[in-house]
Amino acid sequence: MKKVFICGGASYNSVITLDQFPNPVAQTIQQCHFNETIGNTGAGKALNLSQLDFEIIFHTLIGKDTFGEKVLSYLDHPNINVIADIDPNGTERHVNILNSKGERISIFVNPNSKEINIDYSKIEKHIATSDITVINISDYCRNIIPICKKLKKEIWTDLHDYNGENPYHQDFIDAADNIFLSSEKFEGYRTFMEKLIESGKKLVVCTHGKEGATALSYKEGWIEVNAIDNFKMVNTNGAGDAFFSGFLYGYSKGFNTLNCMRIATIVAGLCVESLEISNKKLNINLVEQLFNTFYK
Image: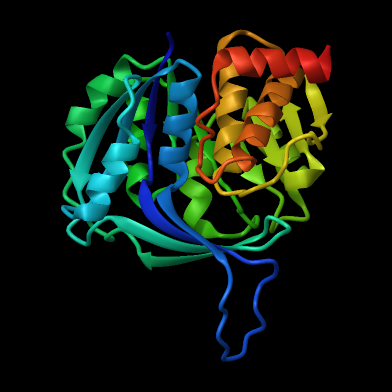
């Protein structure tokens, strides 16, 4: 069982699903689908990877409140060890509005505090013993980068909807060896990917939602995969983290980049069939079965 250290966000979210986004005028909407659940990029990766039989050490921030208790209950899995520091601002909360195309508007109604007193030394021993280190783009996680560098740990990160310009992401871009992102706000992603590989990155993966994904590996070059149409979209929350997790599963098995991308596509497909950020049906046997169905 591979050990993965993950740091990053865990939130408790309200999710509103509409056929289409409302026009920006005052109005009353009387029908929608509504649910509340755990969210955020750290939690998404922790849950998906735990179901793929990784041992997870997950550092995150929660509040001393009922929402923090709910987050911890979702993370109550035998493969997940949660190390939580207390945010005095309370547990992070989002309101996500989705339409039938899978597009999303996220409103951070209770973001993390800007300054939090964290004893980073207690995290170091977990990073030292990890096989894979995932540093998400939560603001506090940039303070963990020097520990990874000190321990000579390869860093995986996920830039999500980076637009090629936002300076917030630069510390993570500079530090990471393997980078994931979305093309949602980034038409020039291919040029960006090439520059990253030229600068010494090992791998860059860009997801395109229902249009599939693109990878550029310093060893294998460009690789493209299509999305799988057989999965019925219910909710796109967490699909990117599921894709990332599926890729890491393939990588941990020594698969080539193409097959890692294919497994990632399957895990993301299972995610969008669920209201949660990880499909409760997800397991290694199901992934292997679907791989044989779609790619053999």
